[in-house]
Amino acid sequence: MTKGIGMTAKAALAVMAGVAALGASTMAQGDAGGRRERPVHPRDAKVEAQWLAGKVAGNPVDCISLTEARSSRNIGDRTILYRVNNKLIYRNDPPGGCPGLAPGSTVISQTPTTRLCRGDILTVRDMVAGFNSGSCTLGAFVPYRTPG
View (cartoon, rainbow, N blue to C red):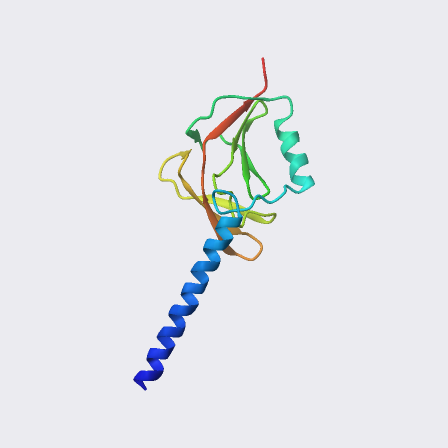
């Protein structure tokens, strides 16, 4: 019986080593963050263009006020836009993207303050299926303002 357990443990170690090697191989094939950039759906590109139309990018900031952000919009699984008003939008591109972010999903922050900051972790929730589908870490917030 001990022999069977030993073989099972050896087989498990072999499988884990294979999974680790596959993961390393996959990361080497992707970008520096181990993630391949997926193309943005034309619908998302159109929404992003509409939200940022006529606005000029400013210097990145580390935090934004959640109480001022009126709405947000996911652009594929790589960008989150936060609308403060018609003249100010913040764009956040999580460094590794935001896996699981798709139509029908939303991001949930569990920040103890009223600010959302670079380095905060968001949980992606599939609102249709009712389960968490991923997470991501926020990057810097780039303000886009209407000139004038």
